Image (cartoon, rainbow, N blue to C red; front, side, top):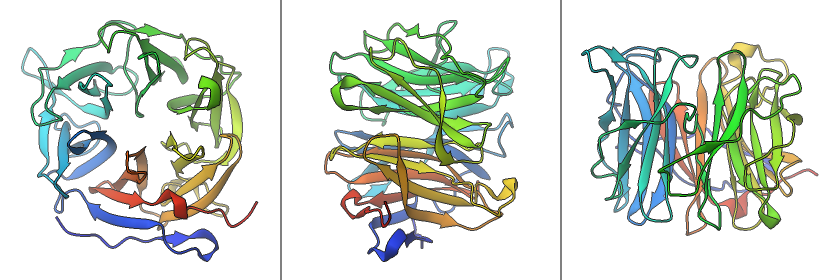
Length: 340
């Protein structure tokens, strides 16, 4: 593994909050890598992504690496889309989730495209060293489509999901028995907003905020006050985004952090994923951009995943030019907006 140089600029001239940055594997084990996910376990970090010849190709499988004793292990493929008849379908969008009971879950999708894929899950009892055989989620349950579930104080797991057949719609799936059974909220009222891939933020007093990508050039927001069972109609936030995946996390200091592609003025839509940035918010409503991780029009830096670990550091994993997965560690105390 090689330490990678990062194109980083801090808004307002603040000292860089970047603690470390590297590629998880260099060279990568596959021609393309995309759609990362990351989780903290009791022994260290675990990351996953899908990799193969290219997106939608049957060669694409789910790859996992573990960050133990200060370094990333060599990635290995832990799941693929091989069917009972010997044929193979592409896999998509892995999502790691560490349950409070200690079970590590790996959700992912199998299918020819997002309109016809289905949800799969496998588990690990030894923080990702070994995995169970995968099984298909029940009809009507898709699993998280890109971003991590959250676990509430009562133990309920709330999983952000969405569908792309018959239009773009978001919904939320809940489990009160550690992922053994699931129920769904049904589609959140969209009011004409085409939205997918929500990320969930826990707000004061137990409210939950969903935020994610749309076809309308802005990020969407929806709120739940009953643990994710019911949601307010979608509304657009004043955050430009070129219909690209995002992720967000509630920070221990009470702020919220967003990793996203900003749709910058003067850029053509195909350059929209050439800039990857971080914004922070005091209330989850109004966001201020504080850091630029990548800025190279024409390239792709996308599909971020973000967590905050017990030591307070923020960890970001994202697609780097579709070739590799880049991992960045950030000190959130140094993410200070320069403008109101």
